[in-house]
Image (cartoon, rainbow, N blue to C red; front, side):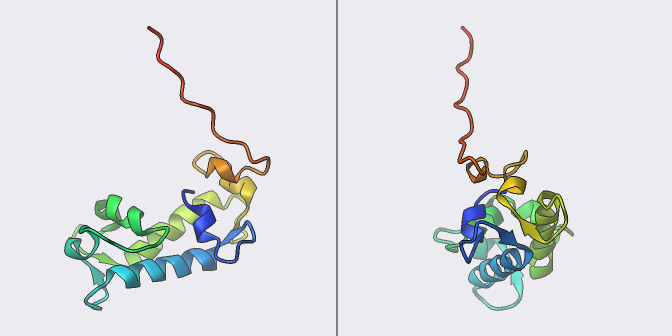
Length: 126
């Protein structure tokens, strides 16, 4: 899961479901400039944005987040997507993403317990 270290609010090396939910709430509140409980393109696509681990995710995946295609992202749509991603990574379903779970395919390579980094890109053969 990208940005897992930023999601780990207490720095214990584990991302909890509560930490993920809190980050969704922070991100949503930061983008909801008019306070109407809905995110529209003019709120999340412009310059600046929200200083949040999920801020760029909202910008890059807005169409996917808008589950019903109405041009608006609701708090529920953002939360459902974030928790679906969390649950997919939570292999043992304990509500906590450990470094081992984050290192699984699709996880964050730098979170591997041995501190390993992803292999360097391969140069194409001539």
